[in-house]
Length: 195
Image (cartoon, rainbow, N blue to C red; front, top):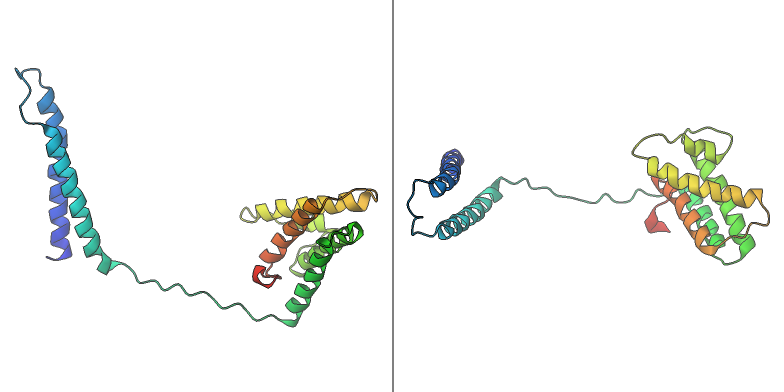
């Protein structure tokens, strides 16, 4: 049985089933009937459901030969260029300072991270007086979430720079470093597997 004949058969079968689905409620609800038919139509609908399920499984099995054979291969990671390797090493040193537990080192890490992200944005073509101006230039709707994360990190940086007595919290520092990393990952300067 070829596919076109099978399709015509199924089209006719669906038409007959649809017509019967419309006709049976009219047939059962006519007020001219002295009594309801003795046959229980629940059995008929259960049989129709089973038949449709078996037909679905049969067609699914037949349709397997028409499915596309997609081979998904992961791209091997690009080799690290000397610039990316230096950027990754510098970022790892920032992370070490941020996660050290020393308050002065954590503040220094946030300041260095903000400067590093600002320079990275400059290298890809964003301009502005500070990192916040560069982050605000990320206007694409797809990258809006990156802008929000970057602005949160930059605002935390500003609080540290503006108030020397600002008390930082290690969880806030981790969130800020993570928000900066979001931008760096999108710019493909760092790879999460390398951290």
